[in-house]
Length: 99
Figure 1 (cartoon, rainbow, N blue to C red):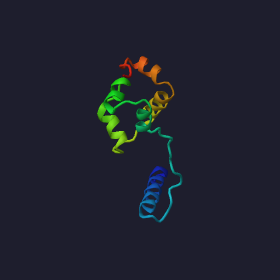
Figure 2 (cartoon, rainbow, N blue to C red):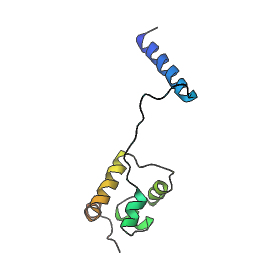
Figure 3 (cartoon, rainbow, N blue to C red):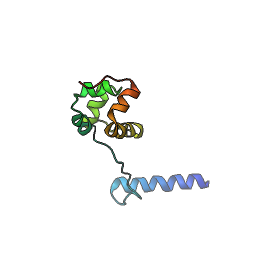
Figure 4 (tube, rainbow, N blue to C red):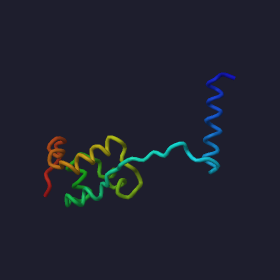
């Protein structure tokens, strides 16, 4: 068997042990995700107004807030910038002004 094949089998066995709870994953990945609902509420915007202002699909904002989806890395970065400088982001993306 090739070195690649041996490594592949070893990895598959390790994954099976982890899935069965017989071994712990070698590391846990965590990400610092901003809370979209908190940011939106701080700005006193509805989900639809938040989405419109920052060029996001309303369904995406709703899914984030209801836990059906998590923001990916670019979305997390955008949310952090929205939290830090919402007016700048709104101007940059051409969104509407807050009412």
